[in-house]
Every structure is written in C-alpha cells, then in structure tokens.
Length: 473
Image (cartoon, rainbow, N blue to C red; front, side, top):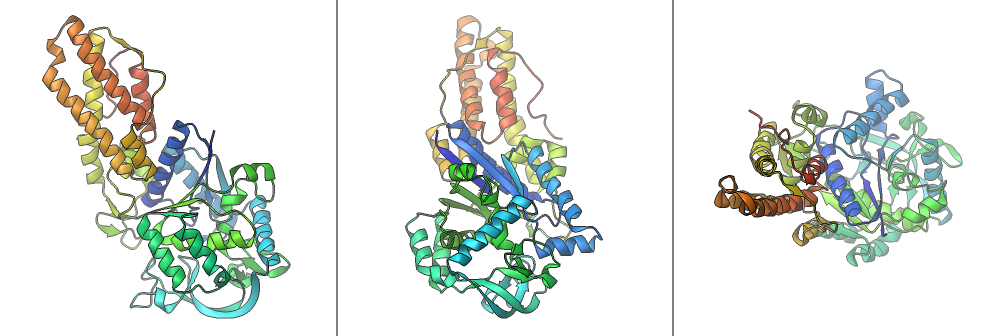
C-alpha cells in the first residue's frame, strides 16, 4: 500500500466556522476518500491554530479565559467535520503540550543551522493575516487586501528573524522543478514571480507583551513567544509525532498533499519549505490551492451580516446536499458563489429529479419483477472521473457522473420498461441497475451517504425505499 498523508489548512479558532471552511474540508475529504478507495494507506490531518493574537483579542472581547474560548471554537470545527461526514485521523490542537515541544524542537533545529537571529523591527502588522505587511502589499487605502477595512497595527519591538533570503535559490529550484508541485499552474507561476522579486527575512517571534504571554515560548528566551505561523505550520508535523513518536513521523512525513486557500499560499509555498529545509527535514510533495466563496455575490463579512454557518445548511437540507453543491457547482480554481436559492435549485434538479428519481424509478420496477442484483467484486473508478480527481477538478468529475444519469434516464424513456414483461423487462432493468451501481461506486468520494444507500439497495433483492432526496418545495 502506498502511504498518503493529506492535511487541511489549520483554521484559526477565534470564531465559528463558516461556509468557506466547509468548502475546504469537503475538497480535502474527497481526496482522502478517493485515495482510500484506490487502496492507499491514508492519514488525514486537521487541527486548530490556537496561538494567534487574534484568538487572544477575540477571547478578551467576549470576556472569556483564552483556553476555554479556544476549546469551545475548536469543538465547533470538529463538529462541522462530523456533520459533513468527514473523519480526521488526527485533530491536532496548537495549545497541546506535544505541539509546544515539537515547535520548540523545530526552532532549535533552525537555530542550530544559524538561520535565526534577533533584531529590532518596526512595521505594519495585520492581525487578520498574523503577518507584517510592506506598503507594496497594501491597497490604495493602505489596507490589507485580505482584510480591507481593518486598521493595521504599527508595531515596534525586538524580534527573532528567520533567514528566508538565504533560501531563495533553493526555493526557486524546488518549485520550478515540481519537486514541490503547486496546483494550479497559475498559482505556481505567482509564487515563482514572488521568489524572483527577492525574498526578505521575516519575523518569527513576538514579545510576551504583545502576545499576552500566550503561545509557544521561544527556547531559552522567556520574554518571547514563537510567531504563530512558525508554530501553526508545524501542526502538520506535531500531529504525526514530530519530536515525540519518530516511528509514526518517519512513516507519514513528508506530506503528500497540503490543501489550502489562496490567501495563505505564501506561508505554505515559501516560508514552510524554507523552514523545513533549514531544519534538515523533508519538504512536502504537493500543494493544492483553492479559491474562495462569495455569498450572494458579495465577499463574506461580519459587517455585511452575510456569513453563512454551514451547520445551519446541513440541518435544513442534509449533508449530501451541501457536499454536492460545494463540489459540483464550484470550480476549485475560481471564486464561487454560495446562496441557498442556488443550493435548492441544484438539489431539486440534480439530486431530487436526477439521481434520486432515477434510483426510485428503477428500484420500483425491479421490485415489481422481483429482481436481485450482485455487483462485480472488482470495480474501478471511471478513467475520466479518475483524471478529474487527480487534477482536483471535482466539479468536472461530478459533471461526468451526471452525464451517465442523464443517459440512463433517456434509456428508460426510450425502452419504457414499465410496458415490458418477463425476460425483456429483466434485461432492460438489469442493464439500468448496472449503470446505477457504476454511478454509486464513482460517487463514493463525493456523496458517501447516498452512494452507500444506493449500493446497499441494489445489492441482493431489490426493494423500493424512501426517496434519497425528497424534493424541496
């Protein structure tokens, strides 16, 4: 079995999860399920980014103790995964003892290589990104592009810095050669351009005063805390035993795939491999970068009041309805729009009238003729679907599967099996059942609940059941 270690980005836990978190969870879960389906030995990791200033500020605003505030929101992310029918093999908390020790070990390895030094610094800090910004990285109003409308903090203090500039040639070779492959290609080109523009060393610590004594202490300097990104990226390693269980770590590392949103590509494509190389550790193999959700055509914003809680959507329409919309109607490589109206439209046309109706019609006719069906033991993913999965084009994979559903519906309307009897009816229906089973097998990474129900319904003696997707009025 080939090992396959996949990670989500590690979400901040300063607020409830939103629909964008669900999108990334689902994209990663499809890859996870696909790899298991083809026989890989998979380890799937997520966690909670807990050592950020924004978490401290959010806890203070609500008048709550930091750890309890963080634990509360981390549990919401774990609940979201469960409601989306996602199982993480590990959910690594940034405040855990093993993660603190792992991050201090990573620091010590980079320090031993001469890549960490201390100096005074003054700059503009975006708490939303947890990153210092240069003027060239701001919009015309002097705001962060990721967090417009939020004032930057002017920070002046003594910090530790990492010698990123030392690794410019290494990073360029790593990414241009696809030894660390960035998908899609235009994001790879974006990073190559950024590296060629010249890399500057970056701050990797904060004073205790600014960090409010929260986070991972810098080894041998009790006045400083490790910068959130240096420690958060290391969750990918601490979650598989770095610094604690070398057998586990050596089995799973390096990561075969990191899945992240476009807003944090630089941390994963530039900072992370440089830190790892400095520490003498292997670099990840592939980085899949997805785009964002808007809501009803607007950027999600608490100010606009349009932040969508995915748990509410699951409660109203079901897990596979949300899974289908996020995976079928959104291109991973373009910003997509979420609205309940569009979800209901896709649900009724594709799930209720499409897949659900096909299954119900054929099952009813098969029951009438007392049919049984036994699927072949060896089944494989369709080559077109397989290629789309390899390319992370989940919407194209589902479009291909739905084309089979359309063809099966056309075959029913042409053959009119309800007018047939005996062997003639049996032949037509068994062919349709075979097609449905192919659909269900290929749907397993995308709609696991529905595909399992279909596979069970059409295995052995076939009976009508309650509709998979009752139409929404």
